[in-house]
Image (cartoon, rainbow, N blue to C red; front, side):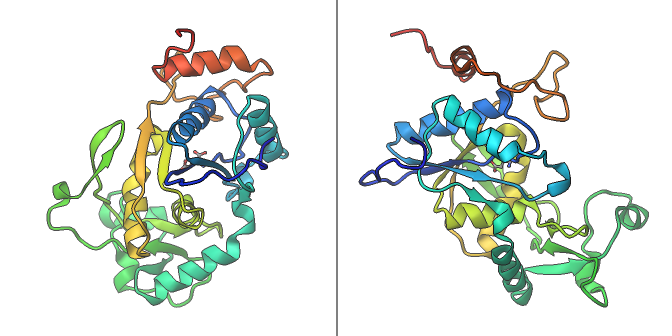
Length: 271
Ligand code: GLU
């Protein structure tokens, strides 16, 4: 039964599946769940589930429970307790304060419009680093990314995608102006708290990895191993997601698991 597995000895691998409860799981989420689960079990590792419920306006009522029920129905067995990011705000707040105190993060009240007018670019120009806002009310908090002389030398090795640029092009948001903690902050802190060693997830998140590496460095956190799997697309070539109306997984796990295994390059029906 989920949550009650006995601890395994000599584990050096801890993986995770970290869905955002914006709706029911679809085929794209199944790929991430399955790839991370099988990689963890193949390495005799643990596999944790974390609900990334950071953004209430985008969340669907009951979606977290539905996701867990669906995982169970598909035969996934996770280790330990499920953690919910909505219950971890105090921890995120403390770390934001540490980052600010260490000059690794700063308040910013620039609007997109101001940024566009100033620099004509959507990339943040660091204005509030040199012109700090008078107060913190209504501000975002950005991670300070030091200038890199040779960005092309900053790389990381992805187990599937190979060598990737780790260059982070702007001071990115850790806390949003609308008052919510940003994914980049929560994912880095929680991967560390849960002692995750291996991240296996969709390649739509490849762009986020340099930011996460940067923040891990600022916080002196251990390195993780990354593997970004190809993402599934619909007939129009759009990534399957709630926004593109991806169909929810149904109650017939076997055909969907077989299709997911095939997509991941496995031969589920060959012995
Ligand atoms: N919560 C993110 C999502 O559902 C995944 C985060 C991650 O795997 O790092 O897209």
